[in-house]
Length: 196
Ligand code: TMP
Image (cartoon, rainbow, N blue to C red; front, side, top):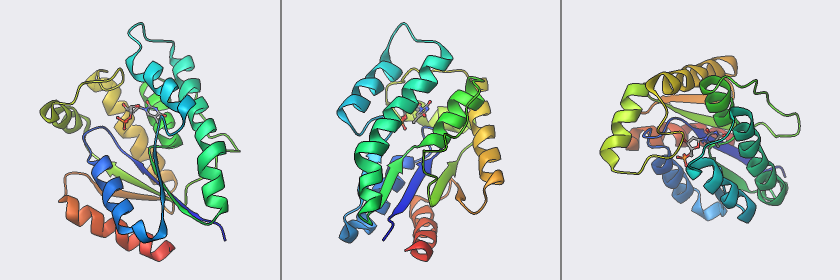
């Protein structure tokens, strides 16, 4: 039995991690695999450190391939095996993040590699860029290299996410991230219930 691959997308401050946790708790009886990107493997966590905290930065294209390298390792060692066992996989960010941040934000020619499986469902927690930056500031969380980018960058990311959701309406569930978290979770569960 093939598993179910669910990804969450959206800007920082969109409440993505809260929704990942709520869904993981709701599906706890099914023993879901819950991962976040970049990361989820030893190699991926080392790449994460480079990507998010390297003071010297890096070229936009190198950045894109490092996100994808971390993803390739996670896919091969954890996500694909879990899906093959019929498990639910919940991934906090996946390749749509690369299309939005490196493609939309940085302007790199980003595409979807044929061997990266498409999620069965992608939940986009949509939030205007200005609001995301404000929420992040109020949260007291330290800024990583991408969070610290300009408003213009974050606006391009949000616009690209919207375009991706419009292009694949069957895969995406786009929800207003400013809504009540409990209401967002109910919407997520409604859609996940249809897929299970
Ligand atoms: P996080 O804050 O959700 O853990 O994500 C880490 C940061 O990495 C966030 O600013 C978005 C960024 N990112 C990309 O730019 N491209 C990607 O492919 C991924 C997975 C994350």
